[in-house]
Every structure is written in C-alpha cells, then in structure tokens.
Length: 172
Image 1 (cartoon, rainbow, N blue to C red):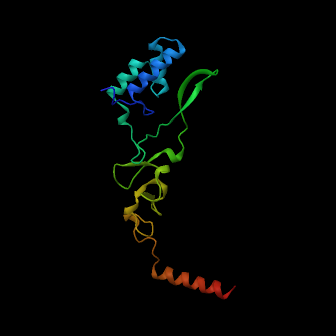
Image 2 (image 1 turned 180 degrees about the vertical axis):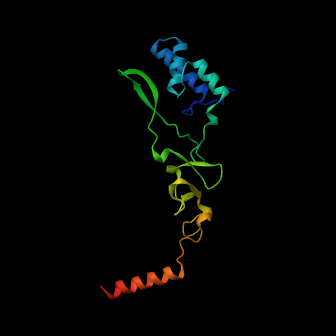
Image 3 (image 1 turned 90 degrees about the vertical axis):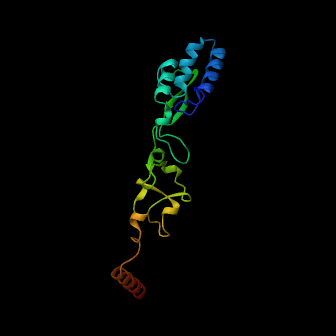
C-alpha cells in the first residue's frame, strides 16, 4: 500500500524511504531522524510515522489536481536549511495566479491557468480567465455555449459601425 502513497511533492513513500537511508548514511544520523527530515523535505508536516498515518488516512489524492499536469495548487521549492546547512527542505512557494486551479466549463475538472494552451483548452472571450473551456466547446468567435452569439453585432450596431467607418474615411 505504501507504494501508492505519495507526498505532496509527488514522491512515493518508497522513494522517500530510499532518500532517508541515503541521508542517514551521508550525514551519519539515525534513520529515524533521517525519516523525519525526509518527510518534511517531501512536504509532510511532523514526524515520519505521523505523516505516513496522515497520508494513509487522507492521502494527497484528496487534493484537487489539474486535469492536464495532475499537480495540485501547492508547490514546493527545494532550499537549504537556514544557516547554510546541508539538509534540503521543501518550502511552500507563493502561489501565483497562473498556478491556481480554475474550473473547466461546468464540469468537475480543474486546470491551472498556465495549462490553458489555446489548443486543447482556452478561455471564452466573455467568461475571461475565471473559467477555462475545452477548445471544442468554444465556437469560432471564442464564445462558450453560455455566450454564443454575443460577438455578433445587432442590425443597429452594424449600421453604426458602418457609419463610423464611412465618417472616418471621409474625414481623413
């Protein structure tokens, strides 16, 4: 079962155990200390046994994930301990707007703004960047089904636009 458990940074429990053994050997520290450090390194909070118990109970699978890259909003950066210590730790990064998960259409899917590529997923010209859509759900004018036809000009708007164009051409 541990093989399927993953830490917030995506590392498997088995990989984390290997990391801890290497750390214990290289730093000449007890394995229990190395396991605690490794759990923290991979985004866990607390001692190894508590982190594993929490992963088994809740898992990272419960966190919402992007339908494209399968990552959560939580991102971590490997940095050195304060004071220049040799043990790397994971530090939560400030979440940028492009890393936030937003809905895809009106489905249960979520996607990062940065994963909206304009090919498979895109934004409706009227919804903006608060909701992404599958590209096939947008019409040729870049409108979702809720806003279909809103790009078309009414007869009065078309006449006004033609009058404006004529006026600009005649006065330049």
